[in-house]
Amino acid sequence: MGVFTRPYDTLLDDFQETARPQREWVDGRGLLLIAGHFLSGVGAGGWAFASAFGYLPGEVASVLLLAASGLAHLLFLGRPGRFWRMVKVRTSWVGRGFLGLTLALAAAVAYLALTLATGRDDTAAAGALWTLSLLGAVVVMLYKGNVYAVCRAIPFWNSSLLPILYVAYALRGGVALLLLFLPWWGAGVDQGLLELLELWIGLSAGVCILFYLTIMASASVGARRSVEDLLRGRVAAAFYGGVVALGLVVPLLVGLWNVVTPVSLGLLALVGAASLSGDFYVKYAIAKAGRYLPHVPGAR
Amino acid sequence: MRYGMVIDLKRCFGCYGCQVSCKAEHATPPGVFFARVVKRETGTYPNVRKVYLPMLCMHCEIPPCEAVCPTGATVKRPDGIVDIDRELCVGCRYCMQACPYEARYFNDRARWYFGAQGPTEYEALGYAQHPVGVVMKCNFCAHRLEHGQLPSCVVTCPTKARTFGDLDDPQSEVSRLIKERCGEPLHPELGTGPSVYFLPA
Image 1: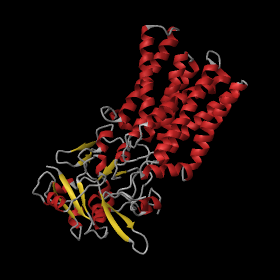
Image 2 (image 1 turned 90 degrees about the vertical axis):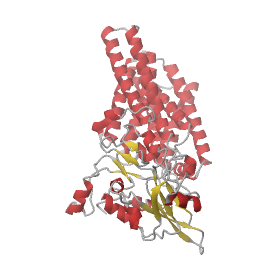
Image 3 (image 1 turned 90 degrees about the horizontal axis):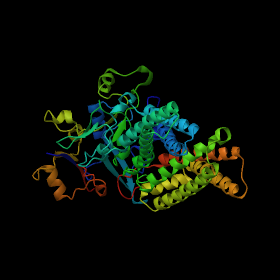
């Protein structure tokens, strides 16, 4: 038993005709990939909003998150030293994501260095760097959902709704990141607009998840089993606790309460933290619920 | 030239000979099976039947694993074999998610069969061809084909359930079997164009 890196039941699964769960991108070191996807989404979304608002703490945090996501991705790779080879962008979304992340990070760091050194962000060079960084951030937001969506082998992921969901969560993560900073570095950011954005994107993400699960529940065998895993199976705790309760219910309740009576900055920061937790759990739950197509029709 | 294989499910009786011979030929680490036999029960009690489905890389005409590979490590050779350049693979495992036939394995760390005793001489020699941190898979025993030999699983099969040949040649045995016995690949709806066909049981 000790010689096997995978549990014995996993080995037995290899010889059963069934919709096997994917494990490489979620178990063990696979969690680093989930963390990388989470951090890159929040970093890209955070950069988009913080740089648009000219909010320095958010910009710095976003750059740090993007760098941390790059590190998490690198640590996940079997051969991290070869990362520079991931440039086949013609057909590979991983290649596109790598280049997008590199572009976003490099341009964002250069933009911050330039604006901090000159004290101005209205120069042509700053404008060009900001545009490049935003372009990279958009690619980063887009690539994750598409990485999953092109996998026809895993029916639950093979949906054009997934990139939309991931972009919505990246934008929401960006807003949540800024909300998190409000109690400490709240000056210079439009709090009302942030609250409105958080509520609106949160609602959109909730609706998107509902649509996604509804469609998948009536799709092929593999997708249906994945939905079962989410709703009443091995991923249910992460789905209900992380995605629904922390990620949707808490932010929406506080957001609605805030419409009636303004809540404290601390509570808004809590909403940010809950939203970010939900963002992580969305990525975890979707990856964990992925199951391969059964080899033959009729198998479960 | 496009190498392909036909597997007669009527002849396969689940002896796992292909699986074991492949393991011996490629000296794959524990838990890795380039050729594996998947078993399945059909029907309901008391009319139950056990069906065996030998699986391997399907060497698709349009391999989804090749399209998603970010480094170009997965290549489609002119003879139809889908192979991995181990020096280019970065170990992102995207190809494993894209393969509908689950034919790929990731060699996450050095391991062997006899625990604390360490690798046997055979293992030490064999595992040297499988670098750690990269993905590996069946290559239709390309090293044997170069010497005019058939893939190991084909040679080993005691019931001659496996036939290997050129799918582009209409006179070849594989083309004849596919035509006469209505051979079908797995998941033709995905449009990957597998080079492994199955004859009905």
